Amino acid sequence: MKKILLSALLLGFIYSPVNADTVRMGTEGAYPPYNFINDNGEIDGFERDLGDELCDRTGLDCEWVQNDWDSIIPNLVSGNYDTIIAGMSITDERDEVIDFTQDYLPPDPSAYITTGDGNKAAYIGIVAAQTSTIQASHVAESGAILVEFATPDETISALRNGEVEAVMADKAFLAPIVDESNGDFKFIGKDVFIGGGVGMGIRESDSDLKDTFNAAIDSMKEDGSLNNLIKKWFGEDASIY
Image: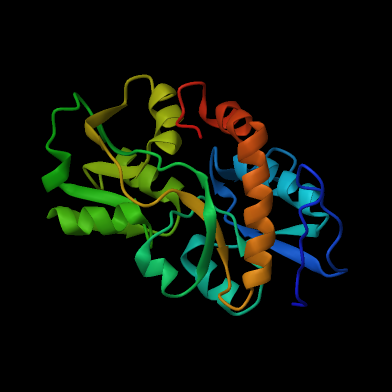
């Protein structure tokens, strides 16, 4: 990708197109409310709104690319797209392979859900989590038996079918599932805070692209529009900046 330049003009960030290249925004499309495929077959959710706004502010021509979670980092490194914007928590382990922008979402609590009366000791049972997530790492380190699945929906199906005793995931993902389960699913235990917030994944060689998106994220934090998006998708009680 050609070098990407950004200038802050006058009293605020004023963006202009930095080159004619298209920036490909990679996301999973399977983790509401972060990102999902809507009834029209289009990528939707918090990160779609955020990514479109960031591209508008930077004057970049952006297109969206859907990619399975388990290969989302390798395919960024391989050049299949230019960013990851997919509910990816910033961790030291990931930062050894790719670079990150600043966080655009504060650390969101992770939680366990289970079936029945909710009195099971989920921490020491058989727990499902999506593969290559911070939740999967946490479960493995907790002493529980970890069962990994490729998609978040598969973890819920495994719990419903009795294959596992609990699921661990972001609470924002689990809350609507619990609410709509008619009492079949319940939260168990305390919320767990892991990871350093959610940021955009960028190839380490694309430092100018990182700087460009960092400036746009800064501007959204400063004018309050990022907080408005967070509240729109995660509720009025969500953590904001």
